[in-house]
View 1 (tube, rainbow, N blue to C red):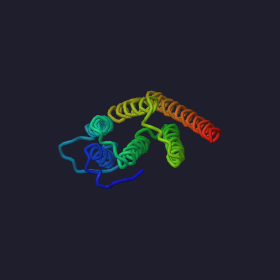
View 2 (view 1 turned 180 degrees about the vertical axis):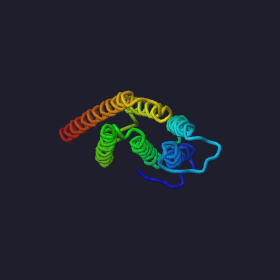
View 3 (view 1 turned 90 degrees about the horizontal axis):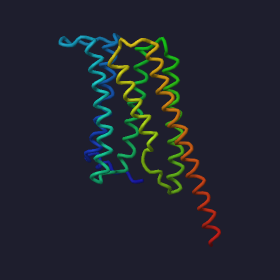
View 4 (view 1 turned 180 degrees about the horizontal axis):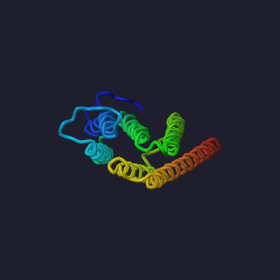
Length: 211
């Protein structure tokens, strides 16, 4: 992997940078709407703040989809993009989950469990990815189950952010769905990594046998 900082000017990477820049904006607007910080926004009320925060998440999700599609379609895939795109995804997820604790404090344990699961999943996937790359094995792009978990996450959090009148029971159900989707994705990725490792070991033994 060779990272060229000049690749930051590629349009897909610009979209990723925009997604990263949306994170602090989302945090500020959400915490203002939730009453945790004060802002002098004369033309907006705090109820509108939730809608604005949800709109920011929609924009973030759209840029997430667009940068990948554009990179593949116009052959703009770069090593820099492979690094900053997942970084932007996970930073966005972490920011959203932490902010939601302020809104649904009564079920903070469930939200913390989701955060911990996402953190453990990403750390282990990063370790596995580095191990395979050091062996010269390309893991390819995201799998369907990873994309499905991401779609479920974005859909659920947009509803949770944009509709603050939801009951705690509804929120519990939605967080349980996100946890289940994340856990399913985690297990499927670990199974895939195990399959690739076994395939690599088998190929290595075959090569030794041919020598």
